[in-house]
Image (cartoon, rainbow, N blue to C red):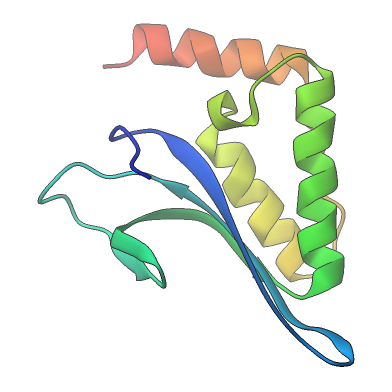
Length: 117
């Protein structure tokens, strides 16, 4: 699977044993162009710009719920503002509730893309 540079995608990984899930992780990344700086992430070649990186089922589950909430707004989560995923990462990393994504925030992001090169 490959992604156009600038595309945002989620990568979910987990490991289980006879007793259940041992490791859960979610990464939300932005694909980079050839030769562009990036961070290596297991199983993603060459890597990507990390927007969110969390582990532990409660945090992974919360991110999946936020993705569902964005989809409920009829917005593709891959089109959500990258800074929103940074916000979610920062808040969940310290066990705080992130702000919800809204249509007005999304419109502001789309407007910013039109006026900024």
